[in-house]
Image (cartoon, one colour):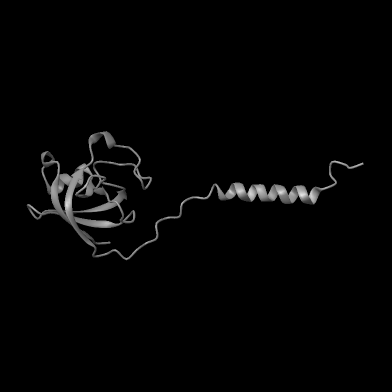
Length: 135
């Protein structure tokens, strides 16, 4: 007659295996690897975030604040500092990348409302810019 605990090692091995398998499903996505992107330049159109995005969570996990000098870029690592220069008036602002976008053809960067206001009239909506990674 077999007892309930006749195969404790087999049960333990199976339990550990299931636990390890469950853990692999709980791993997080690794942080973006830092790249040497300083000096990278790009030109195109810039826009700014609509007011409805105030206090929403960005792709980096930070909360969007339209008073901060932040921006969205499709590929630059989060935390990258970028100088954005308005081609029409040569005004510039340094922003920190903390979100992904813009997802409209021709646009290279989406600026926070405050950052856009430092280099152009908000009524402009979309402007031609040159960008350069500074840090």
